Image (tube, each protein chain N blue to C red):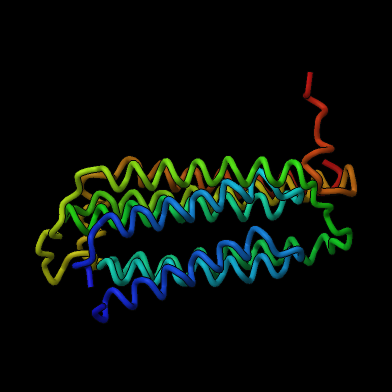
Amino acid sequence: MGTLPLNYYLILSAIVFSIGVTGVLVRRNLIVVLMSIELMLNAVNLTFIAFSRFLGSMEGQVAVFFVMAVAAAEAVIGLAIVISVFRHRQSLDPQEMQLLKW
Amino acid sequence: MDLPTLIFFTLAALLIGASLLVVFLRSVVHSAMALVAALLIIAVFFVILQAPMLGVLQVLVYAGAIMVLFLFVIMFLNLTATEPWRVAWLSFAGVSALLLGGVLAAMLTETETPADPVAATELFGSPEMLARSLFNDFVLPFEVASVLLLVAIVGAVVLAKRGS
């Protein structure tokens, strides 16, 4: 089934990536923002795998492996920060987190 | 329209629908469930593209471990306040995301890409090939990734500990 053109997969992941960007911009809940970031990472993973298949090289799959490891670390740290922020402010609205804003 | 094309477009429509649900559902738990669906469909795409090992890892690590962590935090915090939508900001973000998607899609349509996939062998994408490539050419990044995970574990404990 890899006989479909590579462009199809690239455009699909571009669309999913844009949806993830919308989520990061629009949502006002830190957890959903983190989930949108996971969505963007997965769109990029799909691009890596598609190129790996169409160029016949394993480097793309190795890259996806590392992206998964880094995404797991990012989710763990991000959620720990979410818990600690919620303890301080009782709210997860990124609009209210502007202590460092000049 | 032949069968592979039909399957591709069905899965693509499901994936885009699930991604839209992640962004636009009001409830956080519903968003998380839609994200699980999107991750599973991406795992199916991995298997289609001859990366079965990564498809399995996607289901285990992403749709399994990471999403359980998300759901655990959602239940732990027990969020009740619904977030307000702001229409001006929503339309601005929608327009910019549409622009980004349009530019990316146009660029990708223009780009020269290999039309025929390289004939893949039986072994391509198997755990053996992945491990061979991982432990021959990428040993140092692999070890760095393990240190990164250790740092993440320690960091999460320190950050989330009460009274730190």
